[in-house]
Length: 64
Image 1: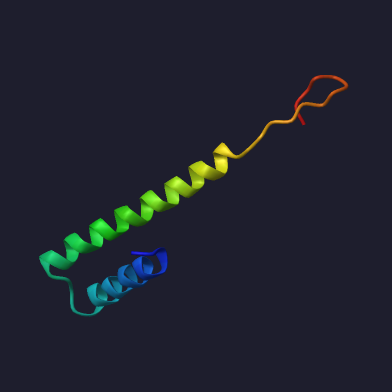
Image 2: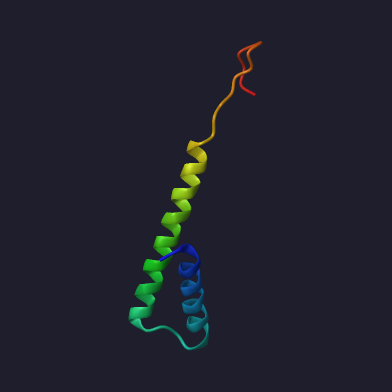
């Protein structure tokens, strides 16, 4: 499931929760989808942090 359809389904379940409530199965599905979404966010954030490179100034050896 791609991220767009994942978010779309999470939003559908959120709207249904507000309107009529969710069944036990839907509540479990929502929890699994949210966790999958958060894993994706964490993975992307970690990739961004891992790509950060410290550069030192050649004149005085201090980090910029």
